[in-house]
Amino acid sequence: MALSRLALVACFVALLVSFTPWRMAALGGLEFALYLALFAATKVASRHPDPVKASERLRWQSDLLMFLLVTNACWLAVQIRLYDDPIMRVEAALLAICVLLFAALRLHMSRFSYALGVAPPVGTLIWIAIDWSDPLAINHYALAMLLFVAAVLLVTSRQQATDRSLTQAMRDLTRQNAALALATEDARAASQAKTDLLAVASHEIRTPLNAVLGFAQALRSETLTPGQANLARGIVEGGQQLTRLLDGVLNLSHLEGRGDQLNLTAVDLRDVIGSAMRVWGPHARDLGLSFTFTDADPTLSFCVMADAARVEQALVALISNAMDATPSNGRVEVRLAGAAKGDTLSVLIEVADAGPRVPPEDRPRIFAAFDQTGRGRVRGTSGVGLAVCARNLALMAGEVGVADLGEGNDPVEGAVFWFAFDAAVAARTPVGPVGAPPLAEVIRILAAEDNPANRNVLAALLGSTRVSLVFAEDGAQALDAWRSQPFDLILMDVNMPVLGGREAVREIRRAEPEGVRIPIWMLTANAFDEDVANYLADGADGVLRKPIDLAELFDLLARTAGDLGQD
Image 1 (tube, rainbow, N blue to C red):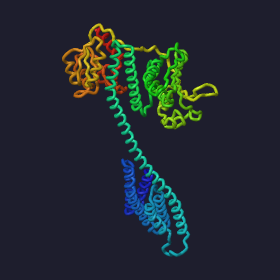
Image 2 (image 1 turned 180 degrees about the vertical axis):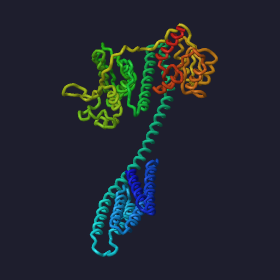
Image 3 (image 1 turned 180 degrees about the horizontal axis):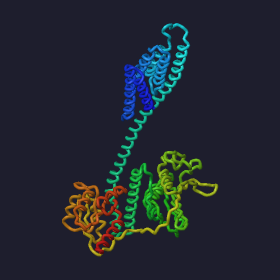
Image 4 (image 1 turned 90 degrees about the vertical axis):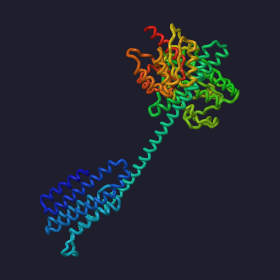
């Protein structure tokens, strides 16, 4: 629209140049220059990074330019009217009318701007219409002009009121958008700070956890009494549950905005339930509760492909919910049932308690976080654990629900919380302590680890194997050790003083002779997909997560021994 108006003004100036004296043509040229300046000011304002400031500056610029535009055009109309010719009078009136419409129909004007723009053409039209030889005589031409001007002012003034309201709404919206953008940036920064805090906290927690799990796993490889073996097993299982909890928290933070994902692995559901029973058993005894497990299908294999952490999280949420609701001397029972359908197993896990019943009207809401039901108010809980359970089952395409404890139309006090899902059948998972692999020859290992407890863990875990273990306390010491003697395998921590693990790996790959490549595996708690991709890009061959999984460590030793045998 602005370009069309500019083109029309240019055509008007061309006509003036072609058919009028130079003074009037000069006024037309000035009109074009003023309109071009108004057009440029609008374009500059539209590209300004701060729309609020740009709008304020454009307002006074456009008012000034608009006043000069209409004044110049009206003066040009007056010059045309001074030619004592009826046709020239009509042409002067047409020019003034165009100026009036142009000024009155401009968008986003204030009342002052509107008055400033329409006053010159209104006065010019009235002056043109009056017969100055007899100003008081009845003049139908002047009356028609007055009616026309009144109609234009009436219509455009209402239009300008609407435009001003829209303009104010747009300004308010612009300010709100700017505030929203600032709030979004603050929220993004807070979210990143939270993620960084969780990552640091996880790393710091995993250091002592790695020691606890490592020493417990090493202890299980020793000759123990049945009681000692059971205690060591409880330590390992409790530590593994804590590790999965940490992984779940980090994954939730890491995947925010990208959606949750399942991590499917072969898992024995009986082992998952047994581990939870052993970990929660002491707490149940402290509460004075009977805590039992019923295997409804003891001949059925429950080894399936599932997300072990999410299944365990859902189970623990139901167990915790049941223990919170059950009074002392009550009973909490976990029940496992299933039905095979070819290569798929339909799984049902129930947790029955002796707490308050859940009325039918509360059941749709009990798995919603912070939605208090009658049972929730009695317990004083927020329902977050049950909401997490429901979210996990939804992700697994499963179901979750609650029923009365009892059958038929005569239910007793208590409730049965359950979840069900279908999963592909998997090969049986190994159980019991992991044995050290038989090694035909000694494997020379360089372990770069700055934490003394983690070095002791590695020494304890590898103490029963045929390895020669050399430690380095940072990346620089690791480089010196690598240059001074041959190794068959390097285990490299990532976060170390003096020189980090990634930098040390890059330096080893840069300096090692052509055709000779020593296996390097990173030891780290930071093992998201992008982290692993960065380690592999640096030259690492793989990643061992902390806390160290003994089976993965022994599998790495077996593969290293196999590669040495081939050489």
